[in-house]
Length: 201
Length: 194
Length: 199
Image 1 (cartoon, one colour):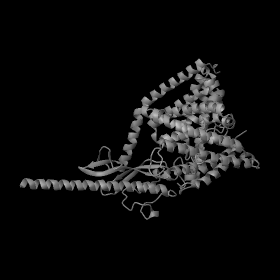
Image 2 (cartoon, one colour; image 1 turned 90 degrees about the vertical axis):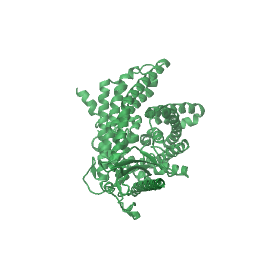
Image 3 (cartoon, one colour; image 1 turned 120 degrees about the vertical axis):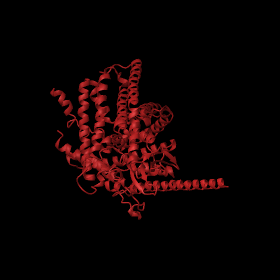
Image 4 (cartoon, helix red, strand yellow; image 1 turned 135 degrees about the horizontal axis):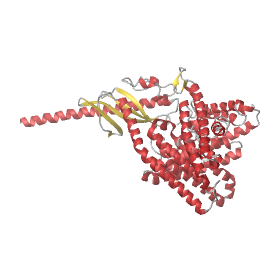
C-alpha cells in the first residue's frame, strides 16, 4: 500500500518520477526523431511521385507567389510541375499535391492532408471514381452542378468544390509560370539577336 | 493458472470497459467510423494500459498517498507520448487518422481508473494481465461498434466494400455513433449482463 | 465578424459534445439533474477558458522556443491538473458560495477530455475562420475556448432537461439508464447536424 505522506517524500517522489519520465521521453525522442523526419519526407516524395510522369528528374522545392512547387525535368526542359495547393474544405484546410503538365493538363492529384468528415468528404482520399477522374483531366474545372466536368463525391459537394478549386488554382499557377518561362526565353533570344547585330556593326 | 486466465477474460464481458464499466466514451464514439479505426484505437489504448498498469503497480508502494494522482498522470502521459512518437515514426498514416484521440488517451478514464482500482494494490504481473484483458475488451467493443457503423454507413467491412451504393450516411456521422452504442448497450444488458 | 463566425461555429456547427465527442463521460455522468448539469457547465466553462489561455502561453513561450513540442501532451495535462487545484484553493478562500456550487465538480474536470482536447486543438490545428487557413492567435484562441465551452454548457443543460423528463417515463428494462440516454443524444446530435454548412 501507499507510503505515508510528508513534505520530503512527496517532493522527492514527484521529482524522481518526473526525472525518470523525462529521461525515457528524451531517449525515445532521440531514437524516433530520424524515422519521423524520414516518414514525412517519404510521404511527400510518394505524393510527388504519384502526381508526376515517370522518368523526369525532380528538382528542389521552389517557392513563388505563395505556392510551393517542384519541377520535373526531362530532356532539358520542364516536363511537369508538382504544385502544393491549399484551400478551405468543409472541415478545415485541404492540401493537395497537383501534378500539372506545362500545357495546363492535370497529370494526377493526391491529398497531402485534410480534415473532412469521415465517410463523406474524406472519401476524396478513397473514392476510386472521384480519384481516377483527375488522371489526365483536361475539361472544365468545376463540378457538374456548377456546369463543369468534375464528378462530385455523393453528398459531399462542398469538399468536391474545394478539391476542384485547389486543382484549378494549381493549374492557373502553372500556366502563369509556364508562360513567364516562355516570355523570358523569347526575351533572351531578342537580347542575343541584338548582340549579334551589334557585333556585325 | 485459472486465476490468471480470469484476470484477462473478465475484461471481455464482465468488466467490459465500454458496455459494463461505461468508461472511455469519447474515443469509443469518435474513432469508430470504421472497423479498422476502432481496432487501431483499441490497440493504441491497450499499449498504454498494459505499460502504465505495470509501471504504476511497481512504483505504488513508494508513492506517498497525497501525490499519487499527479504521479500516475505523469506516468500515463509519458507512455502516451512514447506511443505518439512511435506512431509518428512508424505508422504515420494511422497517427493522422486517429489524430487528437491519441494524446487524449491520457485523460481516458479507463487508464487512470485501472491504475486506481487495480494496479496500485496488485503485483506487476497481475496488473499487466489486467491491463491486457481490459485493453482487449476495449479493442473488441470498439471494433464491433466500428464494424456495425461501417456496414450500415458505407456498406463495407474493414474497408472491403460488399454492398454497392452509399449506405446510410448518418451512421458514419455523430448521431449514428450514439445510436449504435445505445442499442448495443441494450443488447448487452439484455443478454450478457448477469 | 471573424469572432462572430468563431462563436457560432464553436457553439453550434462544431458542438464539442455532439459533433466532436469530447467530454462525453461527465456529460453522461452528471446530466441526471438540471441543477448539477448547470453547476458542471459553469465549472467546465471557467476551466476550459483559463486552461486554454495558460497552455497557449506555455506552448508559445516555453515549448516552441525550446523545440519541445513533443512534450505538449504531458506539459498540458500537468498545467491543467495544477490549474484545477489552484482554482479550487482560490475559490475556497475567495468565494465560498461559488465553491459550494462548483467545488465538487472541479476534481472531475482534470480528466474531462474536453479541457485537454481544446487546449491541444488550439495549438496544433489550422483553422479557417475568416477565409484563410491559419493558426489561432491568443485573442482568437480565447474566444474559441469560451465559445466551445458555452456550446458544451448548452448541450449539457438541454440534455439534462430532457433526461429529467425521461426519468419519469416507463421504458423497457434493458433500455433503462444509459442506453435510452444515448439514443436521446443521438436524436439531439441529428438536430445539431442541421447547423452544419451554416458557417
